[in-house]
Length: 66
Image 1 (cartoon, one colour):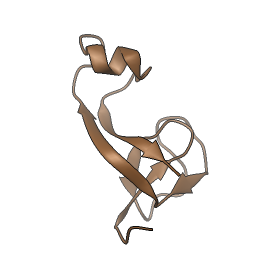
Image 2: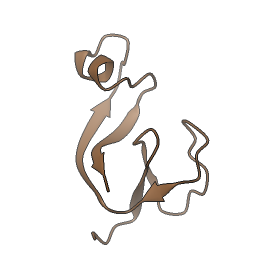
Image 3: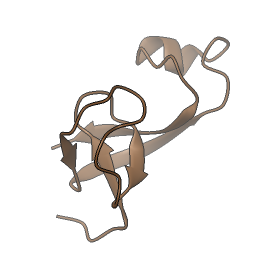
């Protein structure tokens, strides 16, 4: 498990600060500190990667959570 000041929402994969208790993207309370890969989405409407990963809001997302 990685030691980090960030954690990833297990539902939408948004990367948030470790002190966040509710995901601002999907309102989930399930997080993981064991994640890999990072994608930064600036404009999800024009991003092919965001479309493939079904990302609708700008932000930092992880590729995989465990």
